[in-house]
Amino acid sequence: MTKVELIACLIYNFFVMKNVKEIKLNNFKIGADKLTILAGPCVIESYDILAKTAESLKKITEKLDVNFVFKSSFDKANRTSLENYRGPGLEEGLKILAKIKREFDVPIVTDIHIPAQAKPASEVADILQIPAFLCRQTDLLVEAAKTNKIVNIKKGQFLAPQQMLPLTKKVSQSGNDNILLTDRGVSFGYNNLVVDFRAIPIMQSFGYPVFFDATHSVQLPGGQGTSTGGDRSFVAPLAKAAMAAGANGLFFEIHPDPDNAMCDGPNMLSLDDAENMFAICKQIFEVVR
Image 1 (cartoon, rainbow, N blue to C red):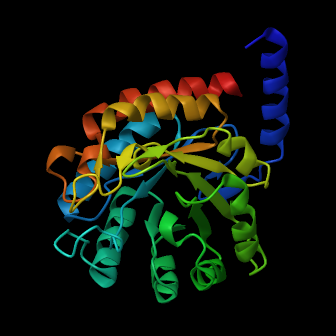
Image 2 (cartoon, rainbow, N blue to C red):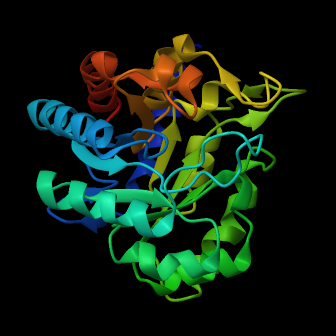
């Protein structure tokens, strides 16, 4: 890249980022000049695993002075096989998340899969997340919007980034303009995903903060036959590239023992590696801004 091209790129990114809405959550703003990280185990396996992860991640993010939202799912409704673990379910899962929120004083993001889950989940979660495979489901988006909680729409692996604009309108036209968008790669042949980092500024041009999901982007969907595979060795380079591309935040699934996790183990980041990963990403985030 020539110096002229570099300057043009920086100017473009500057004006795109200037137009991104800042969304208030508790005592911080998403989309402002501080990195926001959504992180936690893929699915609720036990209270103890969630507590260990939440406590450690809160300490790390406070030390690094970055915004933190704790993530875990009460249900993983799109597992490859009926034999795969899905989670404790809505009622028990929300009880556990509420306990984590109360005991560690952290905001919560969790997935919803059907419209009826939006209201009960909103009583605990600060951010309702729309899974990538469900991002076009109108009733789900509308019910999430009606809760007035922040709605994080994950970009489907089957969509171009510009196709996310109508989905933001389904939420905003339902009376809720507190929207986040998250890129998590795009399908590339069989059992593989690739990342096109142009998606970040394209989706930021809609006016909403854009996150990059560094762990789901290294999945190999269905790559193990009856379950999804992945390669966590690529989490770090992709996360760093997303920061360089101007993402407003990062999404990581993190587990104390990912090799023995009950869901998404191959692509989850180890809790032991979280501090170093966050610190490097923060440095790049601040340089870009």
